Image (cartoon, rainbow, N blue to C red; front, side):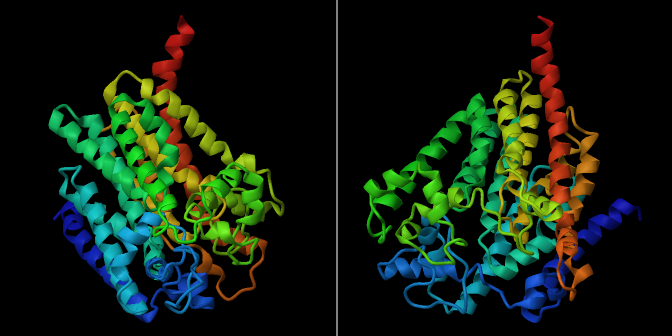
Length: 458
């Protein structure tokens, strides 16, 4: 029996055992020693209880974002910040159960979404080994476990990214109308799921709108997003503590005011009237855009670097990854070779998904589960790419760090200082940066060869 055959048989067993271990640990704490919070405080479900409570708030005529107001639900909660539509269309399903029963149902719901994400990836290859590996790479990772532990609604975002990656991969191979229709369907699903949960895809819009084949789908998705979002601002039953369009129009472009008055940490978790309006879902992105929460649980490049250096660098430095991807977004759609263009778009969209870890300030460990779809797609890309094959092994090996625990377990029990905080964050932040660079290199190379060099030769 060769190694490939052994792996084909072993991977499903490993996957099932991995998921079973996560469920047992959620109940009995088997993996608690690998996480700062599960060792030092009890936070299981802390990100979850605000979800059903947001719908209960609406039923009581108060803001979905007034997490600590109204009737109590669950032992504790972090601030609810999802799209207001998520409250009605998803969180409502779980609001009719007791808090802990509801939490466990949501854990099962999240795992089902992740299994479906694995299936979507597996559908893009004929290799039995890679099909089975897809499920393992989505389900079995320490960030995935922590996502389930805190009960965050991050699984829909993971599914959204898989839909988008699958769509662009299918566009690169589509030769018939039915294949193009399927790719567009996946793109619709990915964009809308992200829009109505966590809008990480906003930075992907330039490249999707500039590309002729994806423009219509992206525009219609944006239109649906805009209409639904406006309804959740102007309809009183959906925004019971709304401040009104007049007040919003006066502050929505006053970024300094937003940063000074709507930052949950600066306000010591006290909500003002604007923070109870549904618009806070968007305004919060501005409120925290320059704020750095220097905390053991924050795994962003800005916090990592500032901790290492002992001082805060200018916020603009950390926006460089975003600026680079925006420039490439304006160039890649004009590549003439369709296969090369969509493969470059796929790598670019993957790189854009990593800018969250590099440019945003407040990144929690569970959010690294959003990097897993990228890693799970790499084995499939190995057999069907035209210009970046040499980068895939290095990218895949780099991405494997996301599956391991953070280095907290190495320093557990010690008084945390700058050096130890750097160690804890090291195997999350640095792999994200290296992986981002590895994805950019082939994109820059192909853009230079196909767009810039011909211009220079004229």
